[in-house]
Amino acid sequence: MNEAVKAIIERSSCNQFKPEHLTKEEIDLIVRAGLNAPSGMNRQPQRLVVVQNPNMVKKLSAMNAAVMGRDGDPFYGAPNVIIVLVEKNGTCIPDGSLAMGNMLNAAYAMGLGARWINRAKEMFETDEGKALLKEWGLTGDLEGIGCCILGYPDMKLETKEKVPGRVFYVD
Image 1 (cartoon, rainbow, N blue to C red):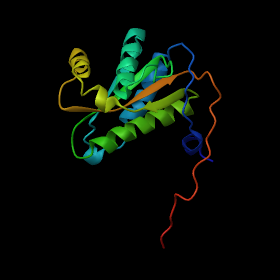
Image 2 (image 1 turned 90 degrees about the vertical axis):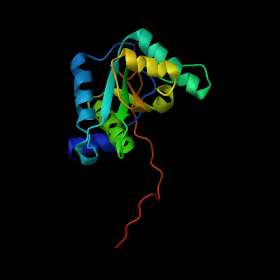
Image 3 (image 1 turned 60 degrees about the horizontal axis):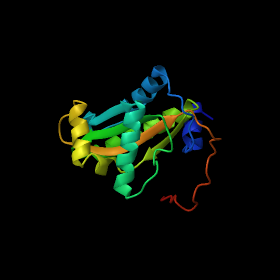
Protein backbone atom coordinates (compact mmCIF):
# COMPACT_ATOMS: atom_id res chain seq x y z
CA MET A 1 0.00 0.00 0.00
CA ASN A 2 1.19 3.53 -0.75
CA GLU A 3 2.83 5.04 2.37
CA ALA A 4 0.79 8.27 2.19
CA VAL A 5 -2.49 6.37 1.94
CA LYS A 6 -1.38 3.99 4.71
CA ALA A 7 -0.72 6.94 7.05
CA ILE A 8 -4.12 8.46 6.28
CA ILE A 9 -5.92 5.16 6.89
CA GLU A 10 -4.03 4.39 10.10
CA ARG A 11 -4.00 7.94 11.57
CA SER A 12 -5.02 8.16 15.20
CA SER A 13 -5.43 11.05 17.62
CA CYS A 14 -3.05 11.48 20.54
CA ASN A 15 -3.99 12.57 24.06
CA GLN A 16 -0.71 11.99 25.90
CA PHE A 17 2.36 14.01 24.99
CA LYS A 18 5.97 14.24 26.10
CA PRO A 19 6.90 17.75 27.29
CA GLU A 20 9.58 18.38 24.64
CA HIS A 21 8.87 20.80 21.81
CA LEU A 22 8.90 19.66 18.22
CA THR A 23 11.87 20.86 16.19
CA LYS A 24 11.54 23.79 13.83
CA GLU A 25 12.00 21.39 10.92
CA GLU A 26 9.11 19.19 12.12
CA ILE A 27 6.83 22.19 12.66
CA ASP A 28 7.76 23.63 9.27
CA LEU A 29 6.87 20.37 7.48
CA ILE A 30 3.50 20.20 9.23
CA VAL A 31 2.79 23.86 8.42
CA ARG A 32 3.77 23.26 4.81
CA ALA A 33 1.28 20.37 4.63
CA GLY A 34 -1.43 22.65 6.03
CA LEU A 35 -0.69 25.45 3.59
CA ASN A 36 -0.81 23.00 0.68
CA ALA A 37 -4.40 21.99 1.41
CA PRO A 38 -6.89 22.61 -1.39
CA SER A 39 -9.04 25.73 -1.17
CA GLY A 40 -12.04 26.95 -3.11
CA MET A 41 -10.93 28.89 -6.21
CA ASN A 42 -7.39 28.71 -4.77
CA ARG A 43 -8.21 31.63 -2.43
CA GLN A 44 -5.90 30.18 0.25
CA PRO A 45 -7.77 31.78 3.19
CA GLN A 46 -5.96 29.70 5.83
CA ARG A 47 -3.87 31.52 8.43
CA LEU A 48 -1.75 29.34 10.70
CA VAL A 49 -0.45 30.55 14.05
CA VAL A 50 2.32 28.38 15.53
CA VAL A 51 2.56 28.59 19.32
CA GLN A 52 5.31 26.93 21.35
CA ASN A 53 5.70 29.41 24.20
CA PRO A 54 4.57 27.47 27.30
CA ASN A 55 2.78 30.47 28.83
CA MET A 56 0.87 31.19 25.63
CA VAL A 57 -0.04 27.51 25.17
CA LYS A 58 -1.36 27.51 28.75
CA LYS A 59 -3.33 30.71 28.09
CA LEU A 60 -4.88 29.29 24.92
CA SER A 61 -5.76 26.07 26.73
CA ALA A 62 -7.49 28.09 29.49
CA MET A 63 -9.40 30.10 26.86
CA ASN A 64 -10.54 26.86 25.22
CA ALA A 65 -11.58 25.39 28.57
CA ALA A 66 -13.54 28.57 29.36
CA VAL A 67 -15.57 28.11 26.17
CA MET A 68 -16.60 24.69 27.51
CA GLY A 69 -17.27 26.12 30.97
CA ARG A 70 -14.78 23.70 32.49
CA ASP A 71 -11.44 23.61 34.22
CA GLY A 72 -8.63 21.37 33.11
CA ASP A 73 -6.45 21.21 30.04
CA PRO A 74 -8.30 20.49 26.79
CA PHE A 75 -4.88 20.49 25.07
CA TYR A 76 -3.83 17.32 26.95
CA GLY A 77 -0.47 18.83 27.91
CA ALA A 78 0.66 19.19 24.29
CA PRO A 79 3.60 21.61 24.13
CA ASN A 80 2.90 22.77 20.55
CA VAL A 81 -0.25 24.29 19.06
CA ILE A 82 -1.05 25.42 15.54
CA ILE A 83 -4.18 27.54 15.41
CA VAL A 84 -6.04 27.41 12.11
CA LEU A 85 -7.89 30.60 11.24
CA VAL A 86 -9.45 31.57 7.93
CA GLU A 87 -10.31 34.78 6.13
CA LYS A 88 -14.09 34.56 5.86
CA ASN A 89 -15.35 33.73 2.37
CA GLY A 90 -17.75 31.25 0.82
CA THR A 91 -15.57 28.17 1.27
CA CYS A 92 -13.49 29.18 4.27
CA ILE A 93 -14.79 26.52 6.69
CA PRO A 94 -13.99 23.54 4.43
CA ASP A 95 -10.73 25.23 3.36
CA GLY A 96 -9.59 25.57 6.97
CA SER A 97 -10.77 22.06 7.77
CA LEU A 98 -8.69 20.65 4.91
CA ALA A 99 -5.62 22.47 6.25
CA MET A 100 -6.24 20.93 9.66
CA GLY A 101 -6.68 17.47 8.15
CA ASN A 102 -3.47 17.79 6.15
CA MET A 103 -1.54 18.75 9.28
CA LEU A 104 -2.99 15.89 11.33
CA ASN A 105 -2.14 13.40 8.59
CA ALA A 106 1.37 14.82 8.12
CA ALA A 107 2.08 14.67 11.86
CA TYR A 108 0.98 11.03 12.03
CA ALA A 109 3.05 10.12 8.96
CA MET A 110 6.07 11.66 10.73
CA GLY A 111 5.49 9.53 13.84
CA LEU A 112 4.22 12.49 15.87
CA GLY A 113 1.13 12.87 18.03
CA ALA A 114 -1.59 15.32 17.04
CA ARG A 115 -5.24 16.03 17.77
CA TRP A 116 -7.90 18.46 16.54
CA ILE A 117 -9.28 20.58 19.36
CA ASN A 118 -12.50 22.43 18.56
CA ARG A 119 -13.76 25.78 19.89
CA ALA A 120 -11.25 28.04 18.08
CA LYS A 121 -14.19 29.93 16.58
CA GLU A 122 -15.53 30.79 20.03
CA MET A 123 -12.04 31.49 21.43
CA PHE A 124 -11.31 34.16 18.86
CA GLU A 125 -14.76 35.75 19.01
CA THR A 126 -14.02 36.89 22.58
CA ASP A 127 -12.40 40.21 23.40
CA GLU A 128 -9.39 38.29 24.71
CA GLY A 129 -9.12 36.33 21.46
CA LYS A 130 -9.50 39.45 19.32
CA ALA A 131 -6.79 41.16 21.38
CA LEU A 132 -4.43 38.21 20.76
CA LEU A 133 -5.03 38.36 17.02
CA LYS A 134 -4.22 42.06 17.06
CA GLU A 135 -1.12 41.45 19.20
CA TRP A 136 0.04 38.82 16.69
CA GLY A 137 -0.48 41.24 13.78
CA LEU A 138 -3.39 39.33 12.25
CA THR A 139 -5.95 41.52 10.56
CA GLY A 140 -9.04 40.96 8.48
CA ASP A 141 -12.31 39.18 9.09
CA LEU A 142 -10.94 35.96 10.60
CA GLU A 143 -12.73 32.92 11.97
CA GLY A 144 -11.17 30.18 14.08
CA ILE A 145 -11.40 26.65 12.69
CA GLY A 146 -9.49 24.61 15.26
CA CYS A 147 -6.38 24.13 17.34
CA CYS A 148 -4.01 21.43 16.15
CA ILE A 149 -2.17 20.23 19.24
CA LEU A 150 1.12 18.48 18.53
CA GLY A 151 4.01 16.75 20.18
CA TYR A 152 5.94 13.57 20.66
CA PRO A 153 3.42 10.92 21.68
CA ASP A 154 3.69 9.48 25.17
CA MET A 155 1.32 6.64 24.26
CA LYS A 156 0.92 4.04 21.57
CA LEU A 157 -1.06 5.46 18.66
CA GLU A 158 -3.61 2.85 17.62
CA THR A 159 -6.14 3.02 14.82
CA LYS A 160 -9.66 2.93 16.23
CA GLU A 161 -12.40 0.71 14.83
CA LYS A 162 -14.53 2.55 12.31
CA VAL A 163 -18.31 2.64 12.49
CA PRO A 164 -19.63 0.37 9.73
CA GLY A 165 -22.48 1.12 7.34
CA ARG A 166 -21.39 4.63 6.36
CA VAL A 167 -20.63 4.02 2.69
CA PHE A 168 -23.32 3.76 0.02
CA TYR A 169 -22.53 2.84 -3.58
CA VAL A 170 -24.93 4.04 -6.25
CA ASP A 171 -24.79 2.48 -9.72
